[in-house]
Figure 1 (cartoon, rainbow, N blue to C red):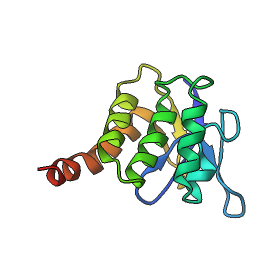
Figure 2: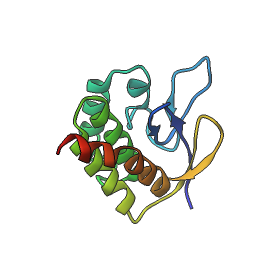
Figure 3: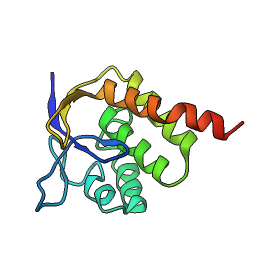
Figure 4: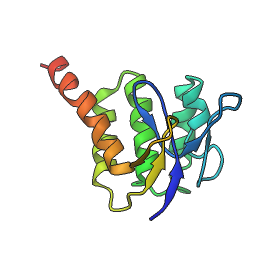
Length: 129
């Protein structure tokens, strides 16, 4: 099973990155920058989305780390339906792996995607009624 490092933001986990208090967050186990981690960490969601969409050819479209991060970007930029779709695809992936969160926990990507869905799905449904 693959093991990668992960950064967790206060509202939603980001997949496959490592960080220290003095360094910007970076991907671990992927080409640096491929998952838009540093851009998400600094709140530059447009850059993060451009990076992840542009790199889809280098990273499998159904890579759960990519989908989790893309869902984060979609949610942060006011596209909750797209965020939920990305997290559903991440949860449904056949290629799950363990990632380390900023707080030192090891979590399966399937669990991260399901946690994101649990956190946001009912709120999105309520808002669209």
